[in-house]
Image (cartoon, rainbow, N blue to C red; front, side, top):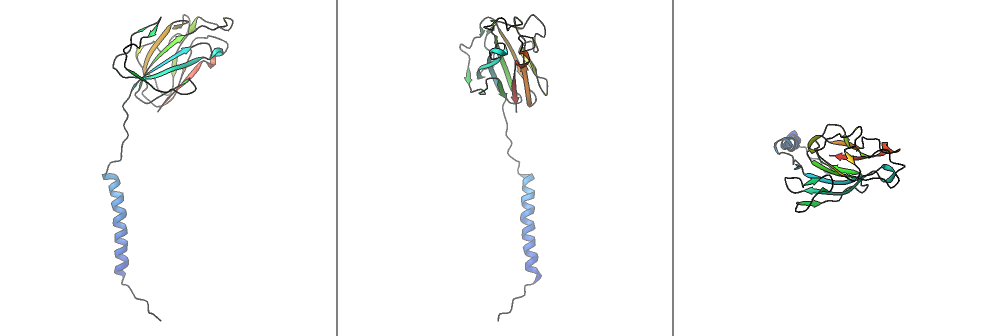
Length: 196
């Protein structure tokens, strides 16, 4: 029969010291070594869309792009934005064609063409209005006004273009909508802007 060896308390104390030192080092280094910070450079987005009464599709995002230059494209209310010789890069928009995605600090230039309905009996106005509401006010940088047309005449008359450039300063879910009673289903004439 073998007799168990007796260890002095020194071995146990040494083990505890090693464990505490390792744990303390990890705790210390989480504050000394900085965590990786994700940074994002705000971009300027172009959103080209149409506005027709909700019974015939409502607001519809047709194209989205990043503007790769400092100046906006030339614009007039008859022809919209002239993208000839403008540096931009298309990116896929949301598949529902009503939701726009952005990040805090992004500028978005909306180009909206007002379209008349195919059934004049459904139409209650001569155009549309436009407003953005959400958890924080947006900064209007160009175009506008925003909001526009809470009463006739509309700011987006049928067969003309409207533009406004806004900056989103806070994250959250925003809503854009028509501010002018345009049809029996006017209350559904809206879309979403998700800012992260």
